[in-house]
Length: 313
Length: 257
Image (cartoon, rainbow over all chains, first blue to last red; front, side, top):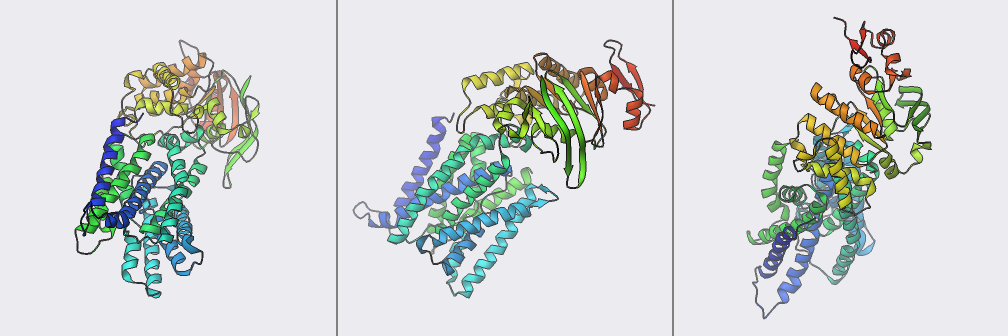
């Protein structure tokens, strides 16, 4: 059972993040003119909750599935695979507003399976080989993205945002509609991930034990990979690749609330959403220009990653 | 009634044959031991029984039904598998882990009910592990861990228990403890299939023993017919002495000095 108290703290945190994100900004806040908060900051908040929540949820699902504390959409290369797909869609696609998400999904999914297969060394997959494979693919795709964007003479700033994340999307009416559609279709996929909490718990024992308890681990792996790639592709096609949220959030949740995925999955969504909103607040207030999100997440994420690397493996 | 039956079963990894033409019958209520030198194919056979590996030839029947035609959640209710290596990735409590044994009985999103928790508690009582039900599984000693793992296996209420060297990391106190738990379970009608390098322990515990060597069945019979000088010498290439245990008359092996 999730105690009401535990939900409560994280809900309060998210509410604080929403209120601050709504109220703070270069043009300030006054009750008499709400046009800036509503037109500029509200879409940003909704995008932040959607993206941060998905990063936390997918990070928790993948860490549980692969029993690997170092994986998240970024370290596995899915995020940059999605960026690569997104750029291809952006440059060459002719399918309307959904071109970018569709291409991002193909890129993410292909990268996920590629990394997973690359990580098999002598028939076994190790925690390090998986992350190594992810990082390698991540470098490759980031390089290609950079090359494609420069070739086609896109502004450098767009490349940086695509590879390092942002929430300052300018929502045209068309884009807003596609965003709403995407949020709606992502909900059943998120519910699918939540629904696998017990299988993920059982998998934390020996994989063969999980199978002998009636879990089809191959099918589960395939489905969670597909669902994760799908959700990350949707996020990346709006915000670009954001690092470390998906890595840190599940760890923090497990430290505080224990390892039961019944709690870890939904609470990672909540904390991921709050953390991304706070990060975004920092990214848009500490410098005269808006910093990409991953600049800030790397500042707290890297020490965290080093801590994990030293602690156990 | 036959619990597990194989007919002319063969298995290979790549081109390397691991098991060849095994025809075995294990009767319900048996305490069935599998022994043999390293690389004989013991673990592979146990995994095939558990449905984790699929033989290339021959099939496994569980209670007269083809094993691979039984849905995996139904099969999980018939047999519990305990591998040699057990690790835990997250610091779940002992009770949480034992409750994992209820997985095949629960629906997709269902939380364990009161009745499931009662079953887990009973299993912990049975293996004398109830006192640490709230401890983290990462903090257990080897003996305690093995009792918790057995309790997990029992919580699925299996008819058949498959164990891969359950005593290999234990001192003799804890070995005897585990064997006594298994004997008690066997008396309650659960078929035990037990794989071990410890021939003496196998002799004491089991009513039937399968001797494997290089993937072939050498013999399958009561312990007294298997654990004798000629067979042991032929398979293990040593010159053992076999004595009869003073209290049970079961054969015990003494290593050459």
